[in-house]
Length: 336
Ligand SMILES: Nc1ncnc2c1ncn2[C@@H]1O[C@H](COP(=O)(O)OP(=O)(O)OP(=O)(O)O)[C@@H](O)[C@H]1O
Image (tube, rainbow, N blue to C red; front, side):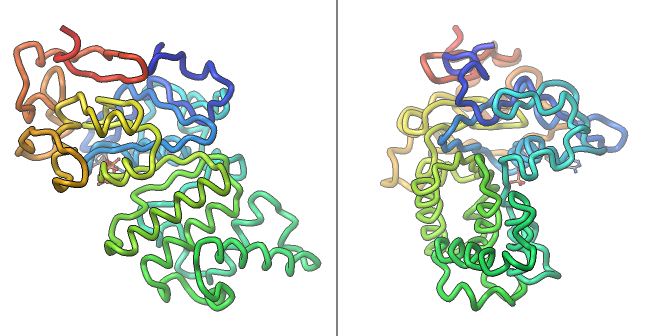
């Protein structure tokens, strides 16, 4: 299978590869297809963005990669996930927290999910540190462990890091919680850090600070990043490559710069047109009205077709992946 001009998993710098993944959720006795034929990859040192509206399946994809969909209502229909070219289980059931200590950490959408409300920040960071280095919590090494924790918190631009170790997560501001959650993930020394909506719910100034913090982390640690966001401008600022998701499918992917400057899929164009003018050259396509798709009643063919201002007869059948150099788009406009 060709994705973006190269064979997935063929390069030895692949960190995580998702191949033809199909996942459903059981709902009212029905199988709701939430991820459909997903192919994506994060390579060593890359910053990859998954972009799409609420409900497009971004978090489900991240959870599938993490092995967190290990029981109903999630149903693994088909496909595989590889970590450094090694299959990490043909079924999601094999996966429960499959990456813990193995190189992938996740910062969840709401930092209070990443952080346990009943333990102090210091206790939780010590736990994170022991994922990679189980002996670090032993008596003789506590001083060294504390030093590493304080250094990592300082790297997150937290002033007076010692002062928050005895605090509980709810005693911190939203921005501070996000920094602690990122520190907790980094203490596990991951090769891939997945961040689900890292800036959502934070005020504009804190968002900017978190974005520059993520850039700094990438620069200084070389960690690969998978950024999940509904905000294409966040992906534009942070990512090298972008996958655009809609109704559980990837409709477009390619280098971030090209997607931002020359979006191909009409859905990507509508996402771009929601960015205020002057920030980027928003394409002149009206934002499509209408609700996000109901996965129970997807139209035949392209799922975006009912909202697409450019749809035509062919769109009632599913377009193939059209690959042009390192870009992929799933749209009949390019398959004619
Ligand atoms: N546990 C579940 N049981 C049934 N359906 C679910 C479950 N979790 C998610 N879904 C459905 O799967 C679809 C994708 O949800 P998902 O949270 O992955 O989307 P998203 O793009 O991350 O959106 P958001 O940013 O709002 O979380 C949605 O239709 C959602 O209702």
